[in-house]
Length: 422
Ligand code: EPZ
Image 1 (cartoon, rainbow, N blue to C red):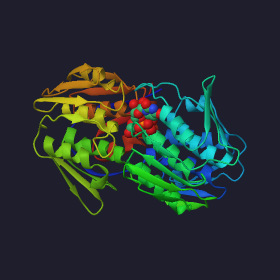
Image 2: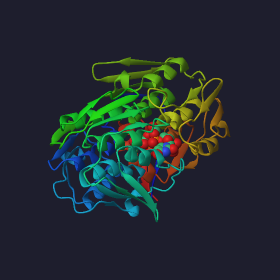
Image 3: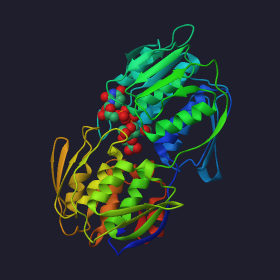
C-alpha cells in the first residue's frame, strides 16, 4: 500500500496542467452504451476510477481501447453481452450506477448493484429509481440489486420533478431520455459543468436536448444515436485543488486549462480570504496577497454554489488562517473525516454534525496521517506542504482514484513530495 511523504518547504512556483474531469468522464463513458457506433473521448484523465469504469463497460460487452497514454478512450458498444453491473465492481465505485439509464434505454433492462455506503455517506439511489420510473420503467430491489425493466415497446417520455438536484440521477435521467419515445422534462436538475459536458457529447451523437446548466432540462427522444468524438471538459475539482497549493504554501502558480467559469463560487471565497486569481490566456494564475489567509465561512451547495468536493481542501487552507472559519457541509452527511487527521497536525477544528468550526493556528506540524476518501487525502497533502517537518499520508489508493500523478504535478512546482511503498 503506497504512502505519500511530503515535507513543508518554501513557496511554490510554476505551471500545473489540469486534466480532464473525472466526474465528466465517468458519465461520458457509459454514454457509449446508447449507440452501436463508436464513441471516442479525448483529454481523458489517467485515474483508477476510469480503469474501473472501463472494466465495467467491458463486462457488459463493450470494447474500450485506451490510447495516447490513457488520454484517448476509443469505445464501442456494438455487441453488448450483458445487462448486469456486478456488485464486485459497483462497490468499488458508486459512479458505476451511471450505466443504469443507458442500459435501460438501449437494452430495455438493467440489473445494477446498489453501491452500498461509502466513507462520506449512505449514498442512496432513490432519485435514480424515481427518474427511471418517470420514463415508464419498473424498478425492483432484490438481493442488493436493482432490477429495472422498460415497457415492452421501450421507455416513454415523462416529467420528473426531483426533490434534490442530484448529479448522478440527472445524468441517468438525461441519458435514458435520449432514446425514450416522446418528450421528457427534468425539473430541479443538477447544473454541474460535467452535466453540461455530457449534454454537449450527447448532442454530437444526435440527441435533442435543451436547458442543460439550468434547473430544467427538456429531452426529445430520438430513435437512435450515432457515434461521436468528444473532448472531456477540464476538471474543476482538480483545478481548485491545485489552486490551493500556492495559497497554502506561498508562491505563484498557473493552473493550465483552468477557467474562472468552472470555479466562480470557489474564487469568490478565495478573494474574501485574501487570494488573487487572474485569468491568463492559458489558465488561472493564483497568488495569496499576504502570508496568512483571512478566515472565511463556507457552505457547500449544488453548482453553482461552493462544491462539496473542494470542502476538505478549503478546510486545510483555513487551518492556518487568521480568525475563525465556519464550514457547513450540506451535501453529504459524513464528509469531515479529514478533520481529525488535520488535528493530528495541530489544526484546531470543532465538528458538530454538518458544521466544522476552524480556529486558525499560526502553523501546522508534520505527522503521520490517514487518507479516508478521495478529497480528504489530497487535503492532507496540501496541509503537509505548509507544515513544519514531514507528513506521511497513508492509504493513498484513495488519491489515485481522482488525481493523476499528484506527486509529479506538485513536485514540478517545487513541492518536496514523494511516493513511498510501505
Ligand atoms: C457526484 O456524486 C460526484 N461523483 C461526487 O464527487 C460529488 O461529490 C457529488 O456529485 C455532489 O456534487 C461523480 O460525479 C462520479 P449526488 P453523486 O447524487 O452523483 C443524495 C468525488 O469526490 N442522493 O448529487 O453520487 C446523496 O446521498 C465524488 O469526485 C440521494 O439521497 O452525488 C448525497 O447526499 C464524491 N438519493 C447528495 O444527494 C439519490 O438517489 C448528493 O448526491 C442520489 C443522491
